[in-house]
Length: 254
Image (cartoon, rainbow, N blue to C red; front, side, top):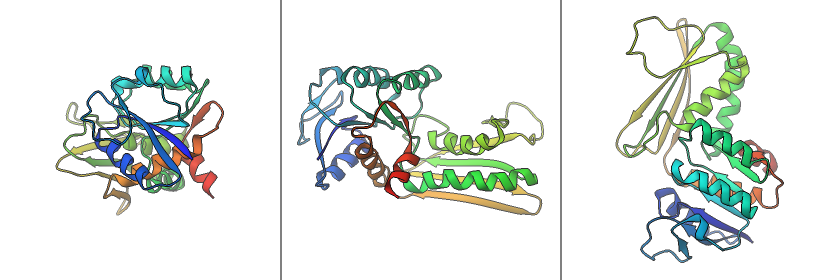
């Protein structure tokens, strides 16, 4: 049995994961953390992570960037592994994540879906061929009108996956309205669209002379992220301190 604490339990993803765990015989939601609660959850809910005294094998976090610092301190102090899914973290917070991973197991992923994490691997091979052949690279991401950070963490992860193949020599360009110049050969354009109830849409475009190759991923339900987060939490049980990602989960399942 895997005992899980849900950090941000009453958010949309928190409720999706609560529902998935309720139907998973291997997993038990032992507590939730959320500033707001109406008592509808079948597990105890604490307003602050520091108030929680429940033992668990892992914490799944889908909260806000402002809550991550306290979560990391708690995980280190209590030695509870964490699946960190909140995006929009500052550079200082990312450094803190790195420091925390030296003391406790942290799995951080901008996107928990199997499809996106497979795409991260495929893009490395594609970029090695297409970028070297002079193809320009653009990423367009689309999300619902309630998402507050832009570009998405997934879009940045896709760009980073490509950039790593070229010793991080590419520059990211988010807005071309401020200066009039043609795009450089060493840039990845990243555009964000916000509207309606779009769960998550990512297109990676390799545009060459007279041909375009596009890699696309569409999420039709938040359940795909929840399933990945639960699988990651199972993976983290008993793992030593370190920084993990979904590639480790995928490799372990093979």
